[in-house]
Image (tube, helix red, strand yellow):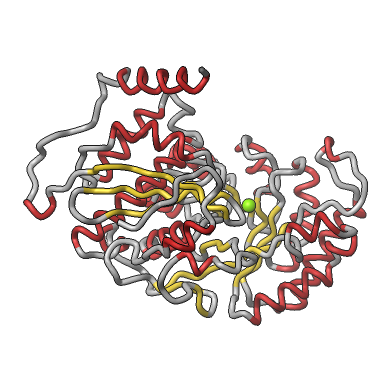
Length: 420
Ligand code: MG
């Protein structure tokens, strides 16, 4: 009963955007680019996070792949599909504008509904690349670099499971962080990030405050890692929005001597003023932005100089073109980007194309060190080599899925994607 009401709501809303309906039939096009979308599908793959793999299918014998984060993107894809089928997938901007209009009343054009739009947008670019025979970076305007630097997310020195199964004082020991940092450096990375918002003792977390002893523990972790890797590697630490302004400033000032590349999300994400106050109070660069969508979401943080680095999530912020808008505006304020990314090879490679096309992307996150089969999901050779990913030259994303591996990890109850 509930589901049928939802579907009726969807149907009503599709019918309710007649005034600004950006679907267009019969726009003039050369025959080899006269293509129509025939279906849009989303399947959840169980990685270390749910990976929403999206496929845009066409009548041209080509399909496009994209990825959305976070879920449940599939519901939104079903909602958006009637607005896409029959349209030419090469009109990427128009279709994104149409989708954004559609989701205005369903979660908001500045909210997480943009995740599905992002995943579909990436898949549209993949189609466009395959139809025209060009890699996505070329369609987006060309590249600044041949390879994109990858930073490895290292959690809290141990993986998340270890942190729940053992004494947190042992798991979160500074030596534990340093040991993992050494492993990652030895694997070829020269950029890495750890979680610093770990709890080692009982505390009244509701206050968002830390004792000086707890702050000293965090400083000891940063000290141990910097001592292990030396001064050159790019190094960030994540605080996951947990703290008050004054506690965040104490942490940020306490680690100034270690020349971090960023301290991430020190205060709750909603307040531009809180970010600005922390940013103005320390020489440690403050990074934020993985929660924000579309360039409008980033504007107040940039115009108020509330952050030093922005981290759009390309699977969430609106997609490849929207990331480029965000990066362009950020560059106008002399702010670099280090995109957030916890996706499969599909989303990661999309991020590589995007980062190649802007001057101010210095590193792209990789969050799947513990997923042994991450590279098995595609048919090519391992993507990350010596801490970077080469920008593909094949058409579109330059990635083909291994459909057997995809099916093996498809979430229960989901219909697997079959080869076309
Ligand atoms: Mg983060």
